Length: 254
Image 1 (cartoon, rainbow, N blue to C red):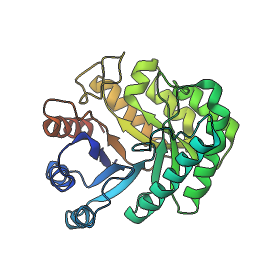
Image 2: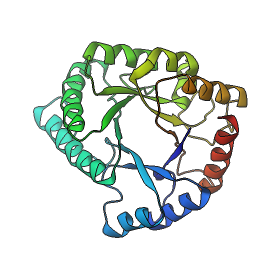
Image 3: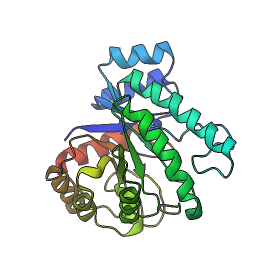
Image 4: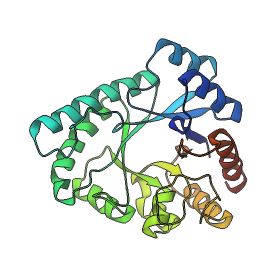
């Protein structure tokens, strides 16, 4: 399986981050909305032979914008942001983008209405839209997110599976992958203490080699054919070393 990496694990200049990721061995990266837009960054991506797999839509929105916003203005601002970000994703060649739910379960109907519009706009650009299950937010479990997506019944909405979030919600990755089937749209790999969303290196927390290998085995049986992306915190003491260690662990277990 191809491994990607969330580029926001590294701070500093975008050009230096790209060089570091390529030196580690990554050939695919994920980016956030409103990043890697300069000609210099775009040229560096090409020069290093990198490709962009996924774009995180909900980052860097203006204050008050929200897909589940309580006002039409807040929701429209978020939709405008997502459309601009999807245009950027298309220009980078990304095949997937994803959103994060808000915090209020009562606002899920508004969120769903906006998601449909985002998914339609993305589909016209051949980009799939993932929805990330996120403990502490309105869709805290993968199982509940799959149920929500089933109710929305939109052909261009998928589950973004995050292994660290599954550790927090005490869900089995293999079971979730099997249940998702062709609704699995993207995969994030990270580790934590089982309680907080720490984005530690793989095998630095409660994740075991056996569990990671079982996750990759389940993915091999899944219709999912995309990459697994390592998503680590930029606040780690040595994020470059952490990314290299996590990549090595993933390759060994896959």
